[in-house]
Image (cartoon, rainbow, N blue to C red; front, side, top):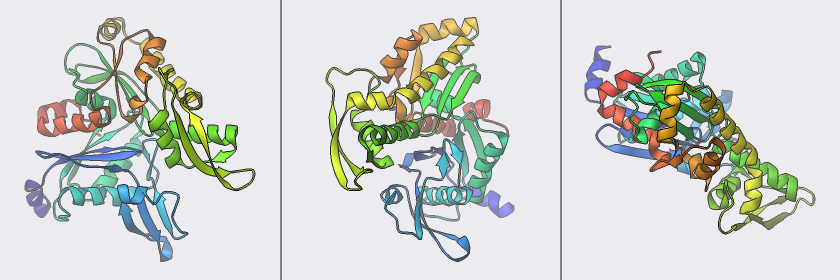
Amino acid sequence: MLLSKILGLFSNDLSIDLGTANTIVLVKGKGIVINEPSVVAVQTGKGGKKKLLAVGHEAKKMLGKTPGNIEAIRPLKEGVIADFEVTEKMIKYFIQKSHSRNSFIRPRIIICIPYGLTQVERKAVKESAMNAGARDVILVEEPKAAAIGAGLPIQDPKGNMVVDIGGGTTEIGVISLGGLVRSKSIRVGGDKFDQAIVDYVKKKFNLLIGDRTAEEVKIEIGTATVPEKEMKMTIKGRDQVTGLLKSLEISSKEVREAISEPLKEIAAAVKEILEIMPPDLASDIVENGIVLTGGGSLIRGLDSYLSKIVKLPVFVSEEPLLAVAKGTGRMLEEIELLQSISLND
């Protein structure tokens, strides 16, 4: 215990945006040091023991291409730890990498979690980080971190609304005086958009494509509203009728049709929060509008799409992919801010 405290004095505290799609790590005083996919490649040996082969960018390259004894795993599904052992290995790897592979450093870690996690799921996140080498773990709900990262004055007696669209979940929060007054977490995000594209291409064209191809399609030509000029992209896959490989052209109109259902789910959740908003807060949101963060907010025209449905101004934050990470970074530097909004589980 004494040794742990002594080592803690020399550690650099860090924050982790532990996302379904990407993990971003910030070190106090240094800023973002890691921004990599939440993917781990492992080799299963005798007795089912898993040996770490690659993490992050290197592991993502292996998705869908590994031989029988090697797996490329995304250990988080819809914002929840799906594989405890692999998540622990991934966190440990990122902790050591952020401290130049120094295995003696035991940092205090801030971890962002979806609002909708159960107590059991929160405990799993905490235990995973502690087992990976943290000396203390502080949990912060993602809507708060996203709002801070987007530059919203969350400690003021005024309502601010943020919609953080991540890989596995969409987090909606109305924040005032540092607390979540109204919030909702739905398990719809970038992964659901990708799956919707996979399903659409399979149904309409009888073409089987992988998640990586679907993600590329979403990024390249995905739109929530009709653009000035429709875009097209060539995709490759396997014809499920003939079994042969083939390529075809898909348009942004078709992608928009493919992702329409996940978009509707997000819009419905935003409307639900607005409908139960206290009147005084509602007037603040009418004045301030809604801020979008997270990778999902980068879909072209999403702000206009939501604005048309909820009849309010909707803005995409600056660097939306980094909003949650930047919010936790501020908490690392401002201990009073951290104490006021962290979860005391």
